[in-house]
Length: 358
Image (cartoon, rainbow, N blue to C red; front, top):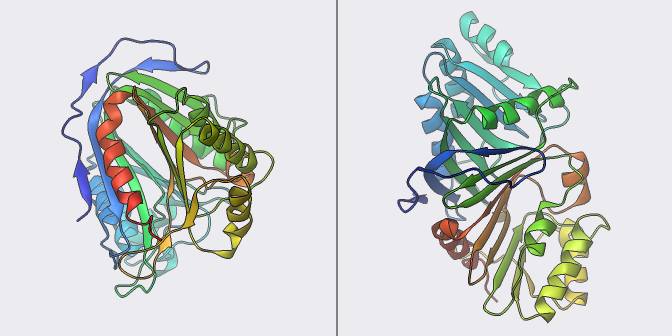
């Protein structure tokens, strides 16, 4: 089971410092975990699927749970959401493409009624995340690249994904930020901002809800101030060298390479990535198609990592590297910056390096 508990990161209180023009806050944050679905994980009970099931099972009467997904086609998770609603949890599940099982297939009638109340279809979400607000104000959050889709036990090409879990005490601001996205997905006005940043003992946690004019990846790269002994990784299912998002990132990476940074880019070997691969090669960037130790798989990551002498940068997103994913489609990006997040960086870098082979 590829689950890492980050014991070096206990909850700590830190003073408020300005880290966002849109909103700032102070928080108790901790309980970080890294959950990974590798190329060898087949079947519906992958590590990240178990994480979702674990957190849904933790919900109690009076809690609020929101899950935003491209698809909700894993029956175990969907049934768990219905069960949680029946025992008194306020559950909202928004999806874009598919729901399995459909509410018409759910019996008995009490379950069917709960199903219709919980699951809501919108043409917009590309999210892969969930947040649970407990009655005491603690938020338990999952943010990753994992789409809660049904996977066969003998899947020929299992999907590789990562997800970050953390707890945030006094997390009502974070939950309100996430809940506002539900309104946006259904065309309703939302008063909460689309960027939310917290200062913690470990560093800055910044959340960006897309569509958004900002480019979180470019922001991360612009924050890399020194290049000697600096490593930068990008690992994506899809990337495009478009003029608004992908190409500026590649140009910045080229500049960082010229300054001495070590840059490595991993892409899933699908036809949509050919243009990005060729552009990166033209810019003399070190880019490769992902290779899988266990045979064949699909690289599902949306990850950016950077490590300097002073701090680490980690970006976990549901957005692929393209203008459509950042400027038009609805996604959530989490940016961690600070030396205290180094244990998370080490785990993710070790995982990415598994697929960096000739």
